[in-house]
Structures are given as C-alpha cells and as structure tokens.
Length: 207
Image (cartoon, rainbow, N blue to C red; front, side, top):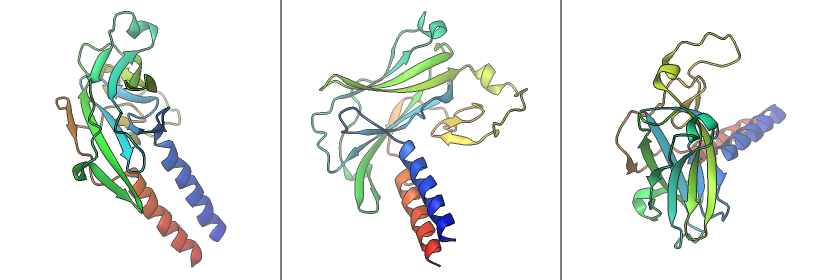
C-alpha cells in the first residue's frame, strides 16, 4: 500500500513541475499558456507568470509578444504585442502561498484578435533588461475548426482540460471572452493543489 501511495505522489510531483516553465535567467516562471496547447481566435489566451520572494526581479522588464512561426501564418501575420511592460510588482494583492513558499502571480487575459491567422505560434516572454527570451509554443485555431465535431475515434478524451484556456479537443478556451487586462489570479493555484494532494497521499501511506 505504501509503495502505491509513493508512486502516486511521484507522478503528481512530476505533473506539478511540468506545469511551469522557467525563464533563462531563472527570475520568473510561466504557468500559462500551456505548451503546445490549442487556443481559438476571438477567445482568451491567458498569460500567467510568477515571481518569487527569494529571487531579485527588481531589474526585470518583461514584454510579452505573440509571434507566428508556421509558414501559413507567418507569411502575412505580424507580431502582436500582448504587453509592452508587464506588471512585475510584488504586492500583497498578487501574493500567493504554498506551504512555506511565497510567490507573486500576475495574469494577462489576452483576447486573440479575429484577424489572427490559424497556425503555430510562440508566446514570447522577453526580459528586455537582459535581452533573454522564453518561448512557449501554442497552436491557434479558427472558431469554425474548433467548433466542428470530431470525426476520429482516437485516444483523445473530449473536453479534458490541459490547463488555463486549453482543452484536449481544442473546442474553445475555458475563459470567457473579455478585453485585454491584467487581473489577480484566482486563489486556487497549482502549487497549493499539489501540496494539498501530496500531504493527503503521504498521510494515506502511513495508514
């Protein structure tokens, strides 16, 4: 029984770690958009990043850009600035706690313009103070393609969540459409969820 509980804990830990991507300078993490996740034209593309209390980010100047990478999209699609100077403040309003760890989370809900061509894109988080970039690859689909019924019988589970704003079948973003804005993230967070489940798993293993 203990070995089963330990295995469950290990798998959960790997899933939690994979939900975050670390910047080259290791002064912030990105939790959304989801790597290789599908997003839909005219719906929300969430961009969520975290700063940590024990890491100096005072010089961080963060720009977020949507950049086409596939031939069909990049031929006629210019880069789109999501945030020229993203909020990197560390205030009580953005503070989150997971066990003994404190971090500061900011989220920008960017509505993908109707003029964006479907295809492969990178959401580029650029630290202008160090000229370093963190690229998160995504796919943008047309509303018609996202709403069309699936004809395959493959191993996809319809409607299964991939994370913020994405689903396995790519049907639509789970965020309601709204203008571009920066909002405090919900009180529920991946680290807190992971810590809670891990604690429960460990307690179960001791029984």
